[in-house]
Picture (spheres, rainbow, N blue to C red):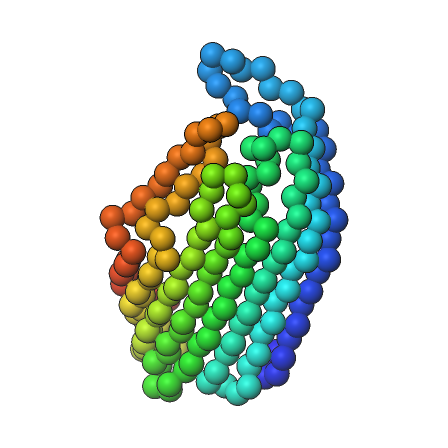
Length: 173
């Protein structure tokens, strides 16, 4: 809605069958469709717009993953969520802050968290020409992320730092 509160919730119990969930390798390429997963949980999203200038969003999901292989179990975090707030200052200026996070699944994996701060300026030149520029600062809670690779083996993805900066320019004709 333009103003007000919107709450969206979902309870689910999904059963996935006949999955190819084992590791496929060049020297041992024998896939089967013998695996399955049952994903049960809930997802919630709350959006609140008290007026034209403010916007608040909150999202959360909880997932129980019962899978026949450990590889399939590592595909989804049990807890994940997000939070965002946006404010329009007028004259085309807007700022937004958001947080995204998910917990580790406990099989050699790490959790993920990121905060974004964006400042943008929108310019309208005539009826058909718009320019929006935005500067975003991102902070990663952990510059290293690990994932399950094989029994007793994890892989790591590493950034050189916890801060990232970006500048975007969008033209609409």
